[in-house]
View 1 (tube, one colour):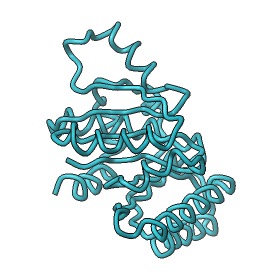
View 2 (cartoon, rainbow, N blue to C red):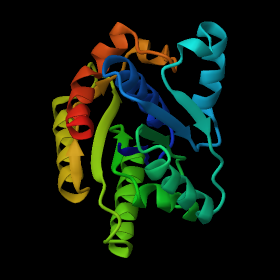
View 3 (cartoon, one colour):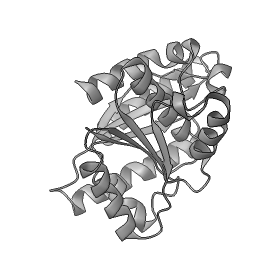
Length: 225
């Protein structure tokens, strides 16, 4: 089964949220075996799971959430080996810290089967995403024989009510640049909705599934087919 990494140089773009929503989707809607590994020191997914256990109980969990502290290159490499070999029957979803320039983050990107990069149409986010793309290109040149992930970009937390005609055209240009220069595919947007903030690590609500349906349908074609 594939190893899926949610990553971007910029924090606050929804990596953790999308990782959980997709884990819920795979385990609930698609009935797949899933394991979530959080490596971000903020532990947002891990802490959410502990709260959810108090509400719904361990017996109702559809997948496990583990926090893994990565502080050395060897630890990261060992984790990816474990994901590929020990958890080979699971879809492993890894939430990556924002600072992907740290040396120990590299193995997570090098050995991933899929890299999912959420972004928003904000200057700082786009600059950081461009940096992220440069890092991926550099790693590919350094490890051409082992690094060959499918890269998928997700415009996330997008307010459909905002944007002038010119701004909408600029957004389309950004998407096109990421397709051509980023070496990947841009998936359908996930719009900004209050329901997304009501996230848990057990299941998506009907509204959350609806909000993410276009994006996740395309993602399923890559991951499951």
